[in-house]
Image 1: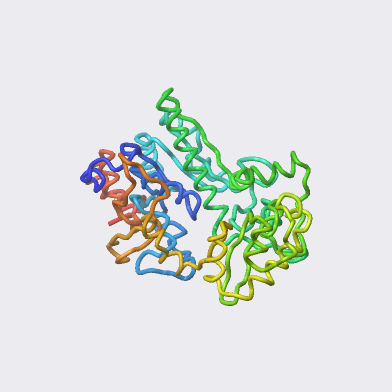
Image 2: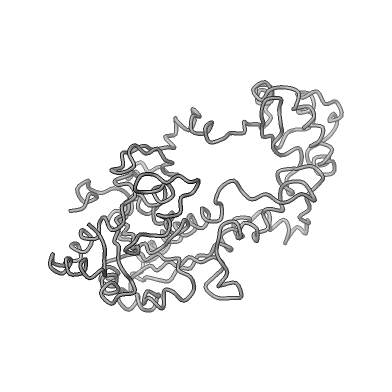
Length: 404
């Protein structure tokens, strides 16, 4: 009996099995979301461990598990297997026969060489939902390019929608391409499982980072393609080329604040800028963008963030503080929402980490286990497939699988 079995039904995906053969961030993050909703996620990784175990973001190495891996692989069991060995490949085929979802983000051609392509797995399990994540698409001129977050952000066009003309574009402050792709894959899995519930059919689902980031910009790109409005940055660092001024982050005498969609006359009264009188957001907000930004910037620099926020919010102007992570973690709304969760990990101690972006009244998400050690559940998973202790011992001895 697994920990999940002992605890009873965990969530809306209780009873579904996900085989996670993905690496790095996008695939593991998508699979973790499925695990948070109760799916039995089995992380199939090399006998030495997945690549992310050895790539510590921010240098946060942890004790036995670095923080990068810890953050992307909770609610999973680890099966460590040598997919290049005949016995290892056979183990995974046995696992596929009992699975509902298979998730991979191999480079083009790798799944086929390993015998883990869709057609092969469909022959084993016709109802499998097979999810393939790539950087640019399964085919086409860019299929072999590296699907790395920064490169996809750069290609998406979004960097040139903010900032000052002539200055270098700035990437997002998070791994945006990976995170959006993970959410897209998670959404696609749920839709494919719903289709299977209705029809009994499994299917191939493909998700790529370029399309995920492009379609995220539904409004902006439609303004360009349908509205014929050029994507032109101004002389001032407005936060978005397709939003009227003043819109952006402004320095105060002790920090920064964000300001957006202000009525110009009201803003002028609050910040003491008489030239805003008679201006309207939908006219001068577009035609005088750089002027509005520069004058707002000069006025806001004269007082503290707290002083301005008190006055701006009281006047009904949309404004807010600019946080660092230390501010975010301690924010009272974050505490009220229960955005962060804490749990004890057997090797990493007390862990505080972002929790779940959704709430269910009947089947809440929860953490049953933290990120596993390499092969921590190999014996448990294989026993669950009906293998004898002798067979498991033989696989461990041969190196086809690894674990305790």
